[in-house]
Structure formats: C-alpha cells, structure tokens
Length: 253
Image (cartoon, rainbow, N blue to C red; front, side, top):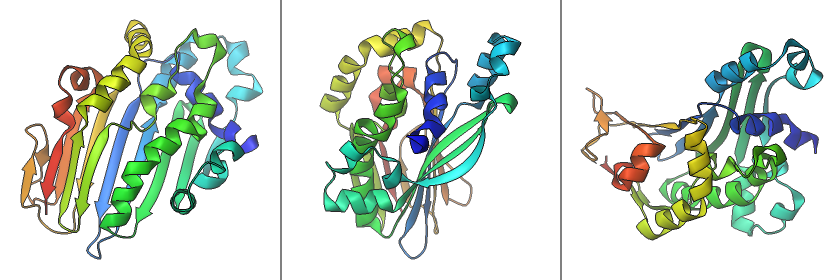
C-alpha cells in the first residue's frame, strides 16, 4: 500500500479544492519517437486548502510529508488491475512512469504519468489504452473519499476514454467520440454538478512540440508558433461541455 499512499493525499485534496490544472505535453522527435506527459498540478488548490486548516491539523505528520519521486506505473497498479491487463498493456504500463512531487507545507503538489512512445503506432496504442488503465486501476483506487459525499474526483482528472486517435509518422488527429462523451457526461453528471457548486475549476492545456514545421492545424483555438514547430491549445471543462468540438485536433507535419 505504501506505493499508493504516496499520492493518496493528493487526490483527496481534489475533493475540497478550487483548481486542478491539467496539461498534456507531446514532444515529437526526428526519429519518430514521442515523449508524452499527462500531468495534474494541484499547487494553487493546496495553497487555498492549507489556509483553511488549523495550525494543529497542518502540523500533523500527514501534512509534513515531502516527496519527489518516480515510480514504475505498472508496479504502482493494484494486483487486481495487473491481472486484468493484456500482455501489450503490461508492456505499455511497464514502459510508463508515475512521477510525484509533493510538499504540502510549501503548497506543492504535482503528479504526472510519463511515457516514451517508440513510434507512431506505439503512440496511438498508448493513447487508446492508458485512459482505461488509469480509470480502472491506480487512479480509481486512490481517489475515492468517504468524506466527499459522492464527489468522485477521479472521474474528472483521470484520462477520459472518449477520443478517437489517428497517429502516423506525419499526422496527429484526435476527435471526440460524441456518443462516448455524452456517456461520460451522463455518468459524471452529479460529479460535475458538485464540482461546479464547490467552485472547482479545470483549466486544460495541450502542448505539442515537433521536430519540423507543421504543415496544417485544424482547430481555431489552437495557436501555432512563429516557427511552426509548436502547437498550444488552452481551454477548460466548462467550454468543452458546451462545445466538445473544441478538443478536436488535426495536425499534419
């Protein structure tokens, strides 16, 4: 259980905090590989929460833990989840890392899932499967909080399984599956309503860095850098709910 306890406090905090910053970073290399980082930054929310706590609570051992570590993602999964994985999913999980940086007294709390895809096919497989593992395994196990009165934070912060991807050596396409997205909204309706009532904000940032200039970007909100090697998309959950197409992205490079 120790390997899970490292991030237990983090996800419990989500249930009482005001902001969850979610960022996806893709670094495409000239050899076809790609480094992917899916990160949650709760630092600003922790700052708000800590100010609401009494000095006696802040002085407890649970709030004095300092961690800056990296775990193998597969080893961090519960045994029951490991047993359900296919051989390909096992290899993918073993090739991924779970990074935790935590210092509550300094209002620092960051968690990231990191993976290096060997090629386009490997990247597409990772993107199509990591959300299922995250939702059904490690993240689900640690985000339930009996004191949250039904607010299940993992439904909002774990990778959502409502995208269709098409990734080739010269293409990165991501399209929302409307049926899956509507099912997600229906499943998380009470969670989203409670998040709104608790003033929980969920800004989202997507950054894609390329080894060569991008030829075309199909998304009006996406910003292409002057050298055409960097694409940035910034939005939030409220905007996505109103217009799911804002998350659709077609990049040719």
